[in-house]
Image (cartoon, rainbow, N blue to C red; front, side):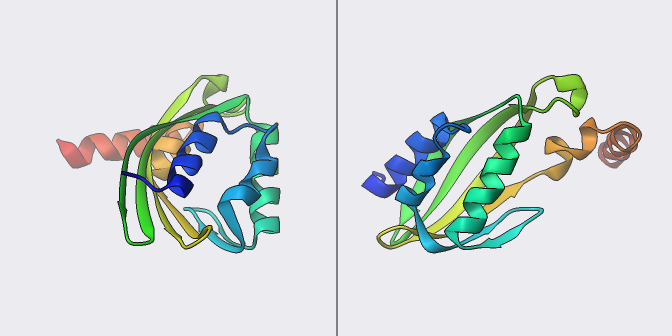
Length: 141
């Protein structure tokens, strides 16, 4: 059973958009270390700025929480993200599978996302997307 903090995390991420980013401070400590495939951010101000820029450029982004595995101050949250960006994939939906590793005490102080950047971005770019899809087909055949 997930702690109250992790339940709040899941509920917020499933409803996260540019209108409720002010709620990030309810989950994250002021010294949050947030890491994903492109960023290593330190502090709630950097994280809030990152999310504000991200959501300002998206048509939409929705997370579905699939599973939570929690033990002694850390959790792995397995999710599916669906998003659309006006300049990627002709603004069509892109679905990405991922996992967040969280460490926390009163609030979350470490958040690292694991995801396939090809699935999220590279496969949907002109020129590069075709090359990546070709390489993936050759690797599995």
